[in-house]
Image 1 (cartoon, rainbow, N blue to C red):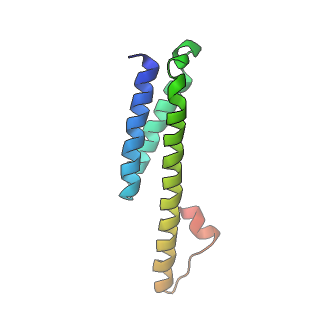
Image 2 (cartoon, helix red, strand yellow; image 1 turned 60 degrees about the horizontal axis):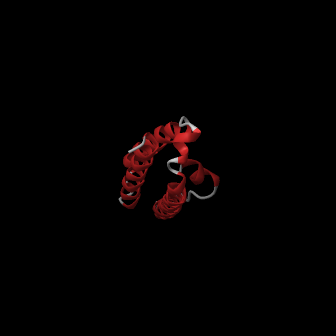
Length: 104
C-alpha cells in the first residue's frame, strides 16, 4: 500500500473513532481525534503530486466522511448548548446568547 493510502486509511479510522466519541459525548475522545486528524492532514499536505494521485479516487469518500462528522459535531454542540441552557435556567441563571456560545 502506498504512503498516501496509509494516511487515508488512518484518517478514515480516526473519523470512525471520532464518530464514536461524538455519539458518547466524550469530549476527551473528540479532542484526541481532532489532534490526530490535524496530524494526518499535515501528512496529506506533505505528499507529492504523484503520491496524491494514488488517492484521487478516495477523495470523494473522505470528503463525505469529514462532512458527516462535521454535521455530527455541530448537532452535538447544539444539543449540549440546549442542555446547558436548561440546566442554568432551572437554577435561575439563564445563560443564552454569546456567553454560552463562547463557552462551547
